[in-house]
Length: 422
Ligand code: EPU
Image (cartoon, rainbow, N blue to C red):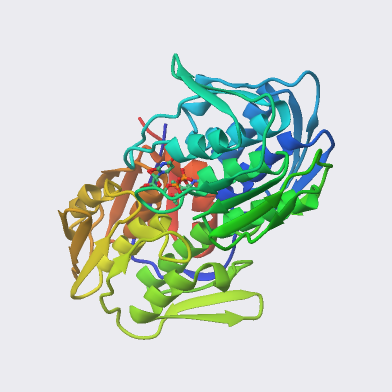
């Protein structure tokens, strides 16, 4: 296993290229199952472990996938299969997004149940509700979701859960509905840019979809879909993470390729904290305009503040003079980073779904352990700001979601090395 060694205290400066969005790319790759023709997907963050896992899964399902740099070509190779095995789903929860396409195209799917994960329980009841409404018979047997349908018929589907809309349940229901007979309406659909990107790809394949990007998506089912070429949107969470890297190190970073319209809530919070974010030639420039001031953050579904930026925002608040409150409304248990940040001298305590952060002058480097993907990113940010050396062990989660992070950070002036853990 690898670890990262960071010598903190350096201001990050320069330009960083933002990769294609992992969370847009995963359902889009899954959607290629819906077609019998070749699909070409560009701007794929192909170095990421999650993308490699999805390509492996597509192969298991009878698709041929080849990668050339950031371009992935997918087409059906041989006999189609419909079983997503435990060995792949257990390494990547997002494998569940092949459920909708398999049901849509093959009328059957067997998907290993993903189970919970370190950020808390992650049920799939809304995914199942969505496809059941389209006429799919669903059973759970031996840890697998067994789904079969003689035919799919369009339906009105309400997809709200206890924590609001669901991104991948919306993706699965939408991907099944595009090949159903008749009209479907998905209410309380997720509005995330990743869902908009998926819908745009489905439209290029010949689907009839309207209203994506709003809580009401309308679909007119078609008989078959053709191949398509599509470019993945930039990763708003990677961009947000580099924004905080600039703010936390008092640096000056230009994000190349990022889109401010996908980051409104993050930019609003950063502005309130005293960070300037401006559009400049070639990207978005981020730097402090004054001393940081505390800002309260509450996560919500898009366009609210993303849960995937909560941990990084907390790192910034640990070195911001004053008290801030960070409330998690999507995954109330997603606070695994707190104890590690406290090991670096942060002063954070948890009260229910809210973390109370009392800013300190400086964090100090320490031996810490990464957990989930975004918590790992938050620890890297803390290490960049800390005095002295930080060793972050178990960084494999980072490789699931951040392309060549140490290379990109080094280019910005960070002292960061990957080492084999002894
Ligand atoms: N939920 C249910 N029932 C369901 C599905 C979800 O109650 O059937 C709940 C979840 O437990 C959670 C809330 O609804 O409380 C929202 O979860 P959602 O379904 O939207 O999450 P997801 O689609 O499984 C995607 C991203 C996550 C990101 C969330 C929220 C992908 C591959 N994953 O997950 O990304 O945190 O949306 O925005 O798109 C990450 O990249 O690090 C990551 C965890």
